[in-house]
Length: 215
Image (cartoon, helix red, strand yellow):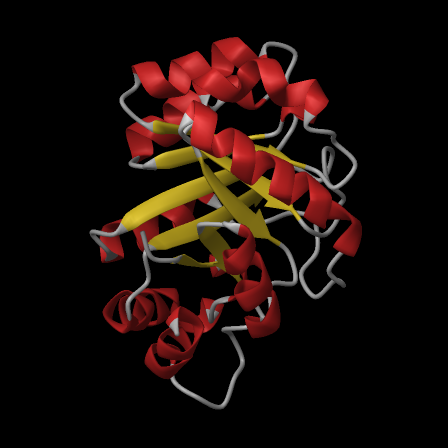
């Protein structure tokens, strides 16, 4: 299977989000990635529900939501009903992670776990049969433009191996440059959340950027 390229819409042009979404769609986006933050679990605020609804209504491609919020279990049904295809929660933020993952799947959606740089594979191992995606945070979540944390690479390698057993895809999010796409796809990573390190604010078109990253 080829790489999944997932623009982080937090980095898109908010003065014309619909136009940006349509351009990204035509350029070959696989999954639109939307961050929600609550200022509590992470020290920042992400996109709003109206932004999500605008992106969702502007594309037929998959849309994921990354819930960087406390108690995500309270909100997953709402996001499923709004049309999210994949819902990522943080095990660090949920008292009943297994139940929340079950809820996502019972709504007919794909369940994702997003794990912080400091979270070990061992602490989530029992949840792996319940997930379709694991997204490894390669920066501490909450802000764009941080430096990639190389110490997460052994964890990524371990999860790629476990993904073959439990049938989930490994994604990465945080300071993903073209060089990192190259390195990590060779490790077996399937999906890449793309922000300012690889996609947005560049001189070349989205289409050309995607073409280069796929090659």
